[in-house]
Structure formats: structure tokens, C-alpha cells
Amino acid sequence: MTVVAASNLGLVNLGFSQPAQTGRRSRAELEALAAGGAALLKDAPAEEIARWAATTFGERFCVTSSMADAVVAHVFSRVAPGVDVVFLDTGLHFPETLRVRDIVAQTMNVNVRSIRPRKTVGQQDGEFGPRLFARSPDECCFLRKVEPLERALSDYDSWATGLRRDESPTRANTPVVAFDPKKGKVKVNPIAAWTQSDVDSYIARWNVPVNELFKKGYGSIGCWPCTRRTKAGEDPRAGRWAMFEKTECGLHV
Ligand code: SF4
Image (cartoon, rainbow, N blue to C red; front, top):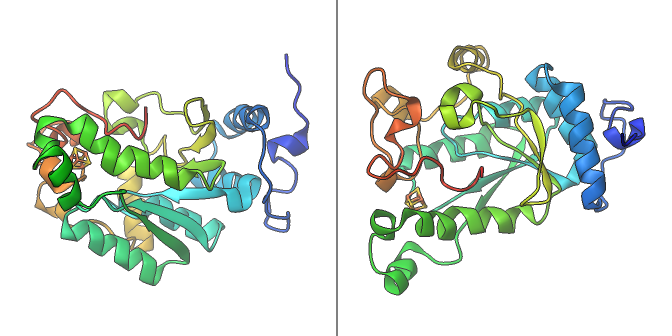
């Protein structure tokens, strides 16, 4: 069994008096941190998970947000003010989604970074033909989400998401902390164990910005060409890529 020093697990002094991490860590160090964090934080509150992540990874940490709501960004704004919040601006978002992004940037103590694809939608249409999303959504998601995220994450050793186990069967086993072997980074999911009711309670308590489309029948919100309203009783993510077998954009696999 590998024994990891407590200091390597980020267990010493979880408060922000600890100097921020600035140097690069090896893959083995990150794997050890993830294993330690997963064991330590399995049943911890979201704030404690967030504090551990921000303290452990310092400047090498960011939050990612789809701006469906700003719950995770808000949790981090409370425990790690000024944290980077990465938003993938695909060029195909609903105006309501961009509105949440702008409100977060204006009202929360976080640093919103909008990351764009290498090509505009027009340039992509010119190279691949119009409506690539309708013919090859995996390719479109790679160009407009996966590659931009990989590029953005090159600045970090760890990132947080808003994934929750109750969102869909594909997310039922989401851990709170795990090493992502493909990215070689530590993925943190502070609200993995939350239910929709927990999310609603947090939003009400803290008056967190929420995408207006939830009030208009959308259960999950992505790019406008690939998102439809959900029907009563449907899985919240049933409205994503409804015309394909596809269930995930590739950011979380
Ligand atoms: Fe393209 Fe649809 Fe993926 Fe957005 S969700 S990047 S429009 S395929």
C-alpha cells in the first residue's frame, strides 16, 4: 500500500493561511492527492470539498461552469474568493445562458474566463459545412467544447464541475474527487451527492443566478441546436442531443 504524507494530501491546515500552490506537480503526486481527497471527503459537505480543492491546488485550480446555474461557482466564491471560473463559450449558447455568465461575472467574487473554440461558427461551417451538430455532434462537440476545455485546463492541475449523481444514470457513480487519467488532472465534484432539492434549496437561500430556461420547460441546458424541452417524467438530460444516442458532450468521459 502506498503511504502518502498528510502534507501531500492537503490535509494540513485547510484554512487559507496556507500558501497557495503555484508549482506544477507530477502525475504521481496528483494521483496521490486525488486518492487522499476522495477518502477524506467522501461524505463531506460541498463547502469542505471546495475548500480542500482550492487550498490544495491554489492557482492551479479552476471551476468549470455551463452557466445552467451558478451554484458551484457560488460555493467557491464563498470559500475561495477570486477563483477562476471557466465557461466554454461555444458560440451556440442560448442568450439566457450568456446572461447567467454575465451576472456571475458582475456580482460574484470570481474571475470568469470565457474560452472560445479556435474557429467561429462561420469558419466551422465553411470548413465542415453548415449544421455540423446535426450530422456529426461528436465532431462538433470536440471542436467547440472538448478541445477548448483541454486548452483551458492546461493552466491547471485540478478543476471542479457541477456534476451530480441524480442527473442521469450515466452520472450515478460520480465521485466527489477522482484522478482523471486521460487529462492527468484531479477532477472535483463538490455537489455530486446533492439532489435537485438540495440545489433548489441552495439557490433559494443564496439567491443564486439560474438560467431562465428552466422555467420554460428545459431540464438541462446546453447549446441551442442540441437542447429541447423535456416532458413530464423524463430524465432531466433527455432533452440533450434528443435526436441521437449521444448523452454526453465528451467533457466528462
Ligand atoms: Fe455542437 Fe451541439 Fe455539441 Fe454544442 S452541444 S458543441 S452545438 S454538437
